[in-house]
Length: 250
Image 1 (cartoon, rainbow, N blue to C red):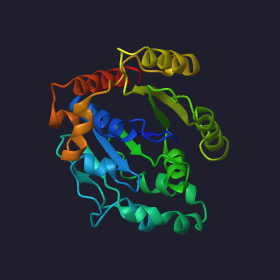
Image 2: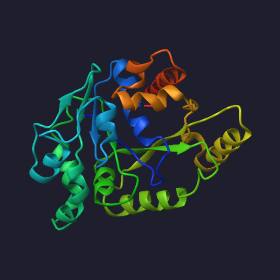
Image 3: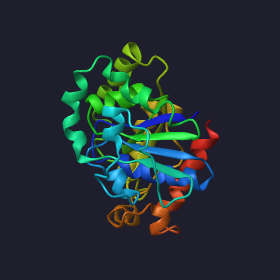
Image 4: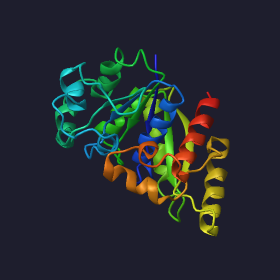
């Protein structure tokens, strides 16, 4: 049975989807079987893995009808995807009227994740129905944090959210780790922010950071992971190191 991990931060623009796509690809290259579930209506993880948005079978069908034929293979060996769709944007009202809606994702993926090592969920950058379902379905949360001035802005709210989910729906939910993204070692600001985050999260912060890298920013526009776009880039090397540290922490 796969370990289910939601990559979540209520603050947008922190490298959430970049981490979902490239950490998943790095784990797959290390011979781990990975399923990505794109729960964000923007479907950036879907397009970033080279898959067309709004495919006929997608996460909307999984959530509303319990459709099981929703998994597709990506171009990366060992890496599969349940794609997203813009239809998710209007699903919150529909699902919130159902009894025990918080458990829908957890229940509907239980039979789909048996053959995987990891199931990694990309969530919207807000606390709504979709994010709540993802957190209830998860064993742990991976938090990406941008190495900039407002890095810790919203962290208190994020911790309140985790407490809310633990107290009401998922008592075993834990923080998997914290990834520093868009890190620039040449600036005092990045170093200082990283130290602040370590002061707050202690040893939950991964030693390997993700640098600010042009190739990482360019890859999604070509529907490629960083390993397909430029496997020799600093971004690719960083996600490989992060994946190895991620596995070694298990």
